[in-house]
Length: 238
Figure (cartoon, helix red, strand yellow):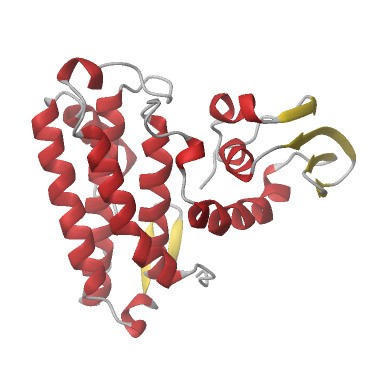
């Protein structure tokens, strides 16, 4: 079991705002534009949109389980079924995807509104393990903001991330950095050292770019960072 240190009120308040911004962006896209590559290797923008919709449904599923004392999976059938559903969703036209995202967004807001302090504290099963249900709000906020920039559009970049999002998430990602580094490897991020052993690289720049680097969006982060040495390739974030 894992305890929660997430800022629940901030996440709950920001999820609807992030969802509205994401929907506003995809509402401007054409069928041809959603077929274009996203920032994520092997995924079109349609894949990203389909994933965001289904991640919302997964968070609703977990919240419903917490409310009814049922143990449910975020993605029934596991990763293979999840991936297949994203692939199927990515074949939809832009209007159908917009409808999916709109419905998912509404269901998320409604589900979170039903929660209370006791139910937010109940354990739910994420693919990575059991966590308090409050992690659903944190995960939804994070997923929508990160995948918004993954669309690879000038209208919403890492510089567009709200200050509260960056300020809330950067400390958490930095705290996890030592465990993601190989033994004997250290990096300097801003004025702080992470890891043990020799410093192989130093990174300085705006907090949004540092967060993007920590989240594996190296291509989005690099133009805004001053990098010395060779930064290590980090394992996937979770």
